[in-house]
Amino acid sequence: MIDPVASTVHFDTRAVFGLLPVRGTFTITHGRIAVGESPEESSVEVAMDVASFTSGNQQRDDHVRSSAYLDVARHPEITFRSQNLERSPQGAVLPGELTACGVTQPVLVTIDGFACQEGRITASGTATVDRYAFGITKAKGMTGRRLNIIVEVVADR
Image 1: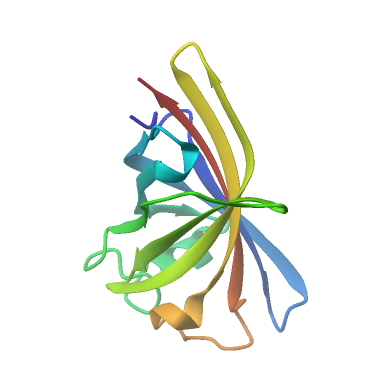
Image 2 (image 1 turned 90 degrees about the vertical axis):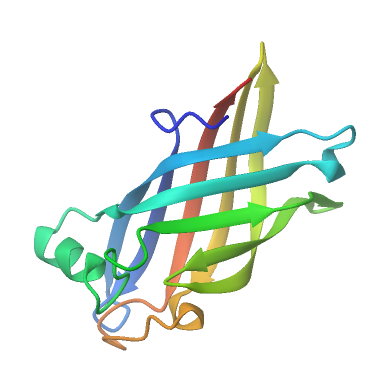
């Protein structure tokens, strides 16, 4: 089971026509990692709390949580699910589905780190998400279209 206190999702993007960096986080509410007989048979499920969106600017955070963007009232969670791990000479990737604002799209999470020690798994991964693919298209030019996502997960048996 994923430990929500020890796990987090970071993002960064650019705002105001790509000039200003915006960074922030979402909290993970729950999830699980199932380690298969072979790593390729492993799966991951994780849910993030949309209301936990924070970027350090209260006005922006409130707007992003509103119906104009992530619509917390109608879509309180963002979820990611992957049913397998793929390996290549370049590394490991979790092909999966991300659901945000009621829209599900394929997303590839590149595994950057993984360790298993005494029943505790730590893993980190990165992905790039196009918010337009999820129907979040407000403020074109003022808000970054693509978000770079960094996931840091700790799970206990």
